[in-house]
Length: 400
Image (cartoon, rainbow, N blue to C red):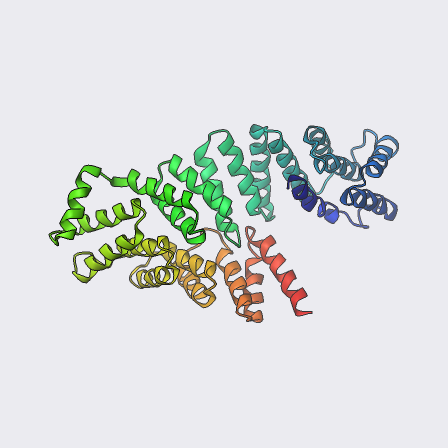
């Protein structure tokens, strides 16, 4: 997996070079090395690299030398020889002769290499510089940059910056990444950010309702929030005897049933309370009801309740959340509608994110012109540029 990841990055490495900046001979030379590495002909690649280092670029501080050093680093990295790769990536940066976008590529490769050998304290400043350069010169900063930042901070027990970056990574991703959401959940729990943890736990159960560990995590969350077990037996008995008349008691009992992994009982209590006009149909209570439906694997009713909550709320995050659930459930028309509402209400946590997911939704609905229109908009934002352009390229091939 690690090797494949480096090969994916390596395949882009010559994109910054062209015949305008290096000679035809030099371009062919680098392509030859590139092909040897890609085909795992490492002996041939090493001979070519040694020849270049010893005969052409010894001590060089030219653009061509920088490209050679980068290739040398990749040669070692794809073979998991990360310690050997590091000096070459550093040497490529040290030449100061690479164009900015090329420096960004090497910076990220060096950061990955440091991560692989556990030098997390070296990863963070490299990626901070990567992000700063990207923001200044409008270069894309992909979700995987934030992911690597998050993991590096996390390995150093720096949970707040780790959580900040995993949140951004999840928002940038065009499809839900279960591992990333799990990691965000664990960090939210460590930081005692229980409201976020509840949302993340709900999303995990929605995406993977059969995984018992998610039940255990969410159960622990509800217990951590507000349960006093001594009083719950009395609440349960009071409900069964039809003597409960306070909203807080109904809601606490519903959450207790979630803690006990009995979402159907939670649904029954909340709906009964609403019917008796004891529980208000406000945004917070409807979100709890929708979560109970999701936990019971009743995705259709869970989404219906969120639609109902959206009508009485002005919260852009709720509309964005509904759009996300609808998209995950392949209800693309509802996703588009809710994302439009979120946009109109001011949601802009990740500029271009809404346009990106709308573009994919329109594509799934076979409305190609609208898909391209939204993806072109998404490609104008730094955080969604790469993904949007990938989808546009895919659609172009699809149309051929």
